[in-house]
Amino acid sequence: GGGMGGGMGGGGGGLFNVAPEKAGKLKVINVCLEHGKKDPNPRVAYEIKPIESFTKNPKVIEVVKMLGQVDQHTVQAAAWHYSNGMTWDELANKVGVKHLNGTKEPYFSRDQLFVAHRVAVEAARRAEENASKAPGKESSLSQQ
Image (cartoon, rainbow, N blue to C red; front, side):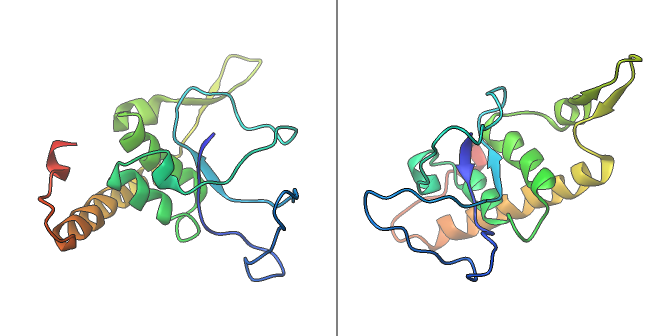
């Protein structure tokens, strides 16, 4: 769980209306912002909220904004890098599948991690740019 992002597809162009106090179903592309939590379950009701209600880290917010422009797995690596402080080595060594014969497959491919690093750099640049445009705010992104 953790973060919901853009990229809602479907026949309605990504727009939908759910009346107050009513429930609706939709598929969304999302990433987890809390490494180690259980995978989402379709039998659990989730509430969609603005990402700013979960994190104030502008780098994480910028990474999640890239969902739909960059594949989900790649954005996931960059998100865990910033939201959970995972190093690129930790992400590269994360096991995705353990086979019965003892072999393991990585969670992220080499290409996904290469692009994820570029996504993280771009997210940091965008966050810094946004901070410098904010009136009366001094940038402190380099400390995060």
